[in-house]
Length: 363
Image (cartoon, rainbow, N blue to C red; front, side, top):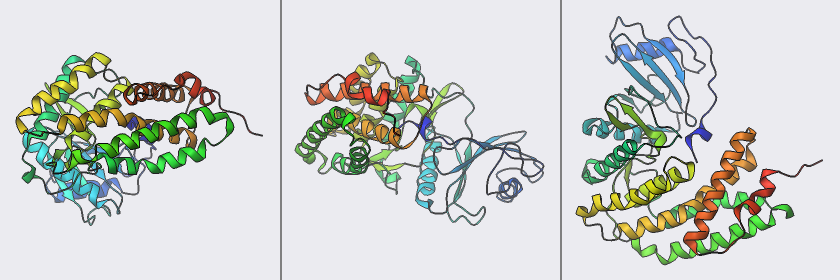
């Protein structure tokens, strides 16, 4: 699911004389005091603090001083593991030039009542959901290859990603069951029957390839290196949003990122066709004998997870008509992808999704 769908609306309210556009359970004066006491900013600094969009249930604050730009992420008290992963990822990424520099980590939550991570805010643009330029794609590939070549013994956390395809598919059962309930009405029968056939074939493909993950060496992974996690800082590109960081399977990481970027329109078909071979060529020196097979399976089945996630979202959450249409277009591309890679002959996606374009009225 794209970060755009997960972003929450920004609520604004002044909190304290030096804080603008903030509505949060944490006071801006408290943020300033913590940053001063820890030496992140000067004791006489008067920062400007503003609330930024979040990607889930965390709070984000951009802090500006006369000499620096910082980002403070405040996680819910129950999300210490996410905060720990982000701090670990930023620590390594900052050392290697792959991400911003970590400035402060407080997993205990004592300072601001919840786990906090502070890092240098990159100065530049993010490709976001728009098409990636050829230069963007080269940087993206460089960052992934560099990260996946780092020694595993430098990482002491496990990525939030699924460790293998079978576990990923097990995770997808929750949205799959939700879709079966949400689209049980007769008007959706063609769609649901097609999804059932696809799900059955996905399950078989994953089960047949299960042994490919036996003995796989886990490598440092970002967790969600989507184009929305890319940001340009001066002449170079870096990755942000490291809360999924840890040891994981690079095949699942790259396969998922490439598939979702293509479905979202960030990668063209031509860019996608060269991205994966270029990645495999760059990883050949590591001697991972099943990497190509794992990557091929990931790109074959990941569109199924995308379909289930987005269809479940559309059933639960009303979206503006334009955004709903955009998401359905992406689902249509995913359905065509699955028909091709799984070797299934199904109805045209336009026919399958027609009831969702014009949902039935009740009452």
